[in-house]
Each structure stands twice: as C-alpha cells, then as structure tokens.
Length: 562
Image (cartoon, rainbow, N blue to C red):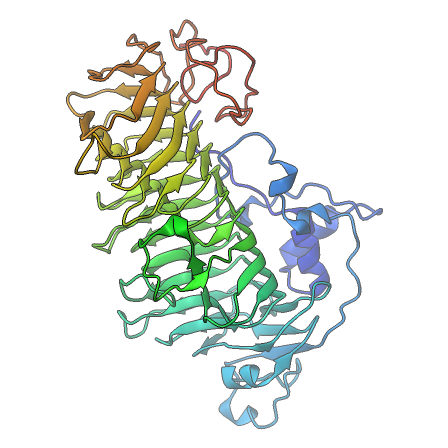
C-alpha cells in the first residue's frame, strides 16, 4: 500500500454552513441535506471531489486538531443577521450609476465594494463566472457570532475570479477581524517580478485580531519577486506590522485551498513583534523591534500547493500552531535562495503532521522540513517526504539564535538527498530523531548528516538519532560532514550503508522494509529498538505503540507477508 493516503472529505458541518448561508453549489447543498439528521446532528459527508489535499494518517484526528466548525456541527445555525451585497463586474459600465449592491442591481466594480463599511453577518458575494480586476480591500469587521463573509453567488460552475492585475494585493484584509473568505479564484500575474500577493492579511498597531477563516480558494499564477519580506510575495501572506501596539492573530484557520504556480511563497507568516533572546541576530532587531507576541489558534490544514517558486509554507511568530494534512508538490523551483517545504522560525510548540512534501527543486536548502532559528519544541510526525533534492530535515539556527527541543518521529522518507539531515552552525539543543524510515534507491544522499560548523569540537549540537531505519539500494554516499561530539546514534538499522560512527544496539542485517514502509515477518528490526518516553503513542500507520522495546523504524504493526 502506498504511504500516500486518501483524500479527506468535506465535513458535514462545513457543507451545512455553506448551504445555510447560500454559498453552496447545488451539489454541495444536496450533500448537506443528506448529511444532517432531523435532530440536527451532522453525519459524515463524502465529497472527495471537493478535497484538494491528502491525509497522511489512517487513524482519526484528535479532538484538539478539529476545527471549531466541526466540533459545533450539532448546533443549528441562527438566522442570518446581516445584509448581502452583490458584485458583478461583467455588467455594463452604464449600470454602475444605479447599482446598489442588490441582486437586481449589483455593484460592478471593486471600488464600489471597497467603499462600503461592512458589519457582523454581512456578505459580500461575487457573481460566479465573472472577473473583477484590481484590489479588493473591504472595510469593517464581523463578530464572533456573525462573521463578515466574502464568497461567490450564482449557478455552480466557474468560480468568481479576482485578478490583481499586478496590484500589490489582489485581496487585502487589513486591521479587521471575524472574516470568512471562501470559494473564490484569485490570480495576480500581470507585470511579473514586483512584490505582490494573492491574499494578504495585515495588522498595523491593531492589537489582537480574532476569527479568520480562509478556505476553498483557488489561487494561481501569482508572479511576485524573489525577496522574503514582511509584506510579500505570497499566495496567502499573513503579516503583522507597526511598533506602537503589539499585535497578533488569535484564531486563524487556513484550509482546503488549492495553490498553484506562485512566486515566491505559498503560505507565509511574518511579524515585527518578534524580538526575543532566542532569535539572537538571525533577524534584524531594528527591522523587527517589537517584543515577541505570537499569533495563536493557527491551523493550516488540507491545502494543496503545487509549483511554488520558493518556500511552501513558513510559520513565524506563532505559538501552538498546527500544520496538518497538506500536500506540497514542487517548491524551490524558481528561486536561487534558500527554501524549504514546510518550516518554522521563531515559533513555540508547532505540530507538523500528516503532510506529504515532495519536489524540492535544489539543494539550497531544498528539504521537506526545517526547524529554523528560535524554533522551540517543534514536532514533525507522521509525514511522508520524497524526491526532495535537498533532503528530509534541516535544523538551522545561526547568528546568535538557538533551536530547542525539535522532535522528528514516525515519518517516512523516500529518495530524499543531497543529505538526509542538515544542521546549521548555531546551538542546537535536544533534537530527537527517532523511529523514522528512510529508503533511498533512485537518489543516494551524499551525507547522512551534514553538520555546518567551523569547530566540531566546540559547537553545541545535541542531536540524538535512534530507532531509525536507513536502507540504501545504491552505492556510496551517507557520509558525515564535520560531525560534532553531541551527534549520537543508537539502535538504528543501517542496510546497504557502511556506518562509520558508533551505533550501539543497532543492526546491519536486512530489515525487510517493504515498499510501503511496513516490516515483513521475521524482520530483525521487530522489537529491536529502545524505548523512548513521550513518543506520541502511535506509529506512522496509526498502530498503537506497545510497552517495552519498540520496533525500529516508523512501523509498529505485525509483520507482513513478503
């Protein structure tokens, strides 16, 4: 069985909410009607055609990772409290003077939509099958009980489209809160090379902004510049600006978006309120001077990103973010700078799980995952990484920054290179890499661990590598660059690889690792590992971990037939 698993269906709650607000297509409304019982309890929906992302775990997600919309599916929505405004940019220019935003006399320009101040429960709807060119920058906010919604209307078919036309932001949500942006097509390709975004969320000396949901967008052909800046260029860009009033987001749900052909970032966070000792000078304290004020309640899930010029996703100045069930297919394809598939910078307690990342375009950095400078307690688990030219994992503090308590467990990697693991020169404290399975046949990495430092004897790199399987179907490779004293191995399985460092408790016999990353009956890796506390409780496939000595690798189930 392939480690790439089935698509995740739309939740019944999401379909019900779309149907009640009038935003669902007829097919979605029919599914919603079928999936709600007379008592109002949502039954599982099954609409895989609407789902762009893969799920990497066959077992159910824990309650903490479910969206509030899913957890409240049993409650019937209240009657719609706000006003509805319509925009049809295909209408004749002469209709503009008499248009009032009603269904019969819709607004015909983005300027008209931008002039209005919206309130709780209001809906700004764009005619499906039409295109508005320019920048949508609505004013006003929703409320916790009645968000302001931006979506499409009219017969199902082509989406309503907003074309930025080379503007800095095709959609700008600035100093607002409780906004739901859903279902539109957004592009911004004209005059390529200048900084621009498809969707940008911006706070400037605002304080805490609550309640954003960005979902089911089709974002494509955003042709920005190659610089990583506070303000762009991205498909979905979340920035916090200013110096006078600490600002952040609380409650930001980015899900089920399809993002294609973007330069340079897929989904990107940055904040000027991000200064703390842990970050050192890895970012300029004069440019980012505010005390570290993390965004919270951040979930990035079930998105599909394809053909990204630079980074796939970057989390920055967040606490407790969850990044799960995303598919990144091709990143660092048009940028000469350093990029990664999914990475963190200056974050606390990030959980990155059930993602599939592939197609890293070159080896600078070019790996699936990265816990960068000032990342504290980042957990990478249950992910599938393959065919990335840069490798699997980077841990990268420098210029006075530290990276602390990184965990990579129960992931699988196929044909990643140029190195599987890379460490930058700064202090790396308590990195735990255990129970992963690495299989290389088409691509043989030059290094198993590339340690970047000028003095291995004095560099503080605490990296413990245990219970992993490394299988090579080729020859050569798997060396070590400047290995530090804190780089330790134990209870790993190395097959087809000449291991040159001590690996107490390890094995070198064929672990009988299948193409699906399961172990066959009789594998010497079964029960040959060493116990690791706080190990997450399940393997890559969802099997419950048992007490005692674990299996080596990412599989903990019964041996399979050969």
